[in-house]
Image (cartoon, rainbow, N blue to C red; front, side, top):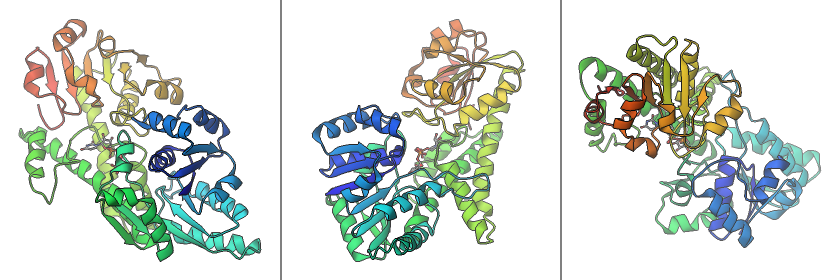
Length: 438
Ligand code: UDX
């Protein structure tokens, strides 16, 4: 089947490459000609395990191609996936400017029936509103053409997005049209044959499932972080508390890892958008707002933890192992490490940083940041008064503490991801603190 993808960011690129890997003929469109030119050479704008190989193989096979031309993209397929960025503005309202630009482009070039699929996360009601706008634009142009809107939210996690697309936990399709639903069932036939459950529901319900799911996952994280903070005060171990909780299938063991707070381009943005959506109807989103506030406070608490461990931050050398918001990505958007580092810099500490993939992004996005960039964990720990494990990259799970002891200034190790057991680090003469465990 021919498929068109409009927007070659994180969601669009993964969706396009994976659909191409399933035998479709996929054309990906972006208005950023430099990005398209790079993609045509196999140069990707993001780091995502497995994606470069997929893009190269499928570009070579002719299943995947890239263009800046909207006319070609709209003609290419009956099914048009909208996968453009939908940032949240300061007032917590989701910015749909990119989506509406795409709708206008579709209206300008549409000459036959289309199925328009929203895959980017959009506020509840966007699909219907976009349909009304498209209808009005077509009428203005005197085009008597049919189309149907579909919501097909993505549940991709950075670092495992290719697998998440090819082997999802579920596929959600929101549409009122049986013909459009049939098209989507065909697109996801391989996942369905592999037993992936598919939920067919209404537009607004599908849009809400995405927000409600992300907010719930974020709530689990803020919840376990609060429990961990209480554990620190009463001597319980938050890692074992989470294990005990997770044995109850109603709770589940995932997303109960205490840490410095959640980051990334989704949870914070989706919580703000969901709060804004509720408030736009005059509803007080108390719980949703608490998830965000608890997360903000958790990052601040980490600064206090570091300050307490070194005595005084002023003129101390603090090492950060990890700047990306999670491992296996170069993405630093709303990374807890970044928020903590900026707080600590305000208190005149010296910062040394190493991250396996995200340093280039940090240099590019914050060129003037007064920190020392290091090319490996041990160099980053030289002369350190406090080593902070901030992102749980695998290479940080097997540090040589004997060697570390010989190069740090003070043997202080703050394990913000509870990668190590306290005993194993203390055995090397380090002061150890985790989150919710000592
Ligand atoms: C999330 C959702 O998981 C995914 O389904 C959705 O499509 C997009 O948003 P992502 O943001 O890529 O995916 O990363 P995720 O693995 O969910 O982690 C988000 C943040 O929560 C990271 O900062 C991570 O470190 C943190 N986290 C996650 C915790 O602090 N504790 C946990 O137990 C799990």
